[in-house]
Length: 172
Ligand code: ADP
Ligand code: MG
Image 1 (cartoon, helix red, strand yellow):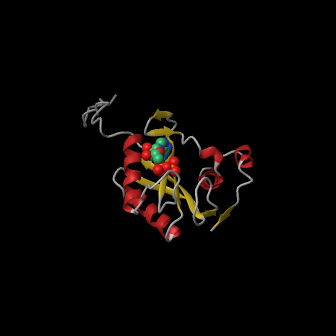
Image 2 (cartoon, rainbow, N blue to C red):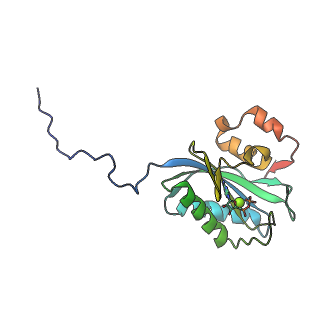
């Protein structure tokens, strides 16, 4: 029998703790100031090129009337990414993209040039002051569930969609 020789050294299990396994995450995008559709396209481009992130799929853009907010209609979408960032670092990366789009926070639920919310991070459940995952309001919002269903149908049941069927939403 041929002897198996260790031509390559075996990889230790934890070669580099900073090299995490990639996790699939879902990000909700929304904007209702300026050219909201262009802002979302730019944000998707930023998601695709941010360090530690890869954009897998982006939903269509959707138009919705503001809920708990004011100003013009919103443009919304959901993106599926893989990331080697931890969830807090991913949130920081999302906030950097928001800030790059000129996001200001004059008051709660103010109109916004760009809002990026972390919906799901793998199967993680996180409840810290700065980060709650799954996003606590995602199942109340047609503007999250419709685009999420488009790119990840297994995650959104008919019952979930029925629960938000009163909310007007239109694919752009
Ligand atoms: P909104 O709730 O309208 O999205 P902001 O975008 O201003 O409001 O977010 C307010 C805070 O919500 C952020 O500073 C962030 O720390 C916190 N937060 C908690 N969980 C999440 C999450 N899953 N995604 C994004 N932000 C979150
Ligand atoms: Mg937000």
